Image (cartoon, rainbow, N blue to C red):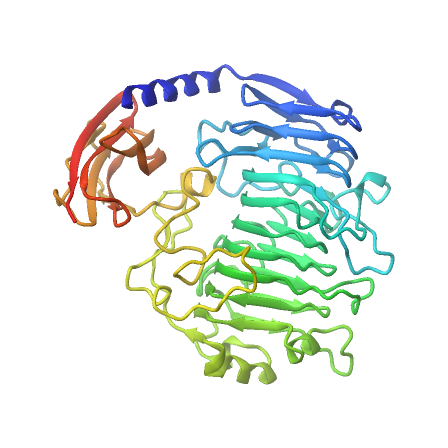
Length: 543
């Protein structure tokens, strides 16, 4: 079984080096046509490429799509128009990647860490409800003269397809003054659309933005975006779960910029999504990014409902709810007083203005709500293993085992769409970003730390310790030069039960921890591959 796995890896690696470059323009996807993009090609988009009404774009796992550079009329983006369908079906082992033309996706260190705005992004437009005067809008990021940029309607159960296990990198190009493309833009997307396991990495504008609609989303990652991580407007009313944002230390604005509407500001329906299990990590309480001033800016008659979440490490404050004196139709104070802004069962910690209600909450009239013990808002350290924003793979998004995220009470979910988990925040003991996100490849260490600074002379892996173990064990390994490292665990029947490491590592010595609390006693094999070295060792779990 292990030999077959190694052969498959080698065959996949060969295929990656033999891919054909396929240029794509708007003329290549016609109305009513079904188009298939496959992993044996690299697709290079030039300009705005639309999936028109009646067209279907199928993208298979492992496919790489690149966007040519350009701004204004020369910008590049993939746009799913109203009535078009995208089936982007990546997997945890083979995600679909959208990136800039110059990116060598086989080398995670070829693009400078502060690169943004090199192409546009992914835009999905639907026929769900928005709260503008006409009920139809023209999507941000496209010229107002483009009729296929329209979104909105009355079908809240509209489907634009499935987008799953997709990484969107280095986007956000300008098409005009103050008009940049988000990583993933959703205009009036309906709730029969499936959007989950999506990463936006180093986008120049927002990571994710919703303009109205009812789409439900989970497992979203917004990393190092130049503006906001999660932005909504125009009556967005979907569900969200497992939203994770990590801000750069020198750029980025709010984790949540939540607007109700603009035309008019008091338009109905109000924007009141429900989010469970978010983790928002800012630029740092002492960072030099003053733009990362608050976690939440809530305004223009928007609501917001957050439960079972963690908000930490921001330069200034936690929550700013707009209050325009004498005008309840243009601010969000009325939404707060009507119960449309709810923060229950959340942890708050690490704010530059101070970890107390007087410092964290900008409005005097909102502080009693957060101080009310019945609302379960706790100011305490969530105990994340490490918060590190460098491209050194040493950050872990997982909390320590003693973290209050595991012991504080959880709020019940309003729908069986939400998954029932035993922790606050986006992570418990499972790093669900592992393997498929670029963030996990270069930033988020997977329960893994360097154990010395000397440069090893070989690629090798040591016997785990302790052995036998129950339920946790550690494994040391060394890398003599920058290399793709893979450590996988199999049971005695040859079935893979865990992936401990899957990504590039700089030269050095490391230790990785593994918790097998959900597995039965028995003999397990762990398989190490780095450079030309392949090693397999046994370990014993005894419960």
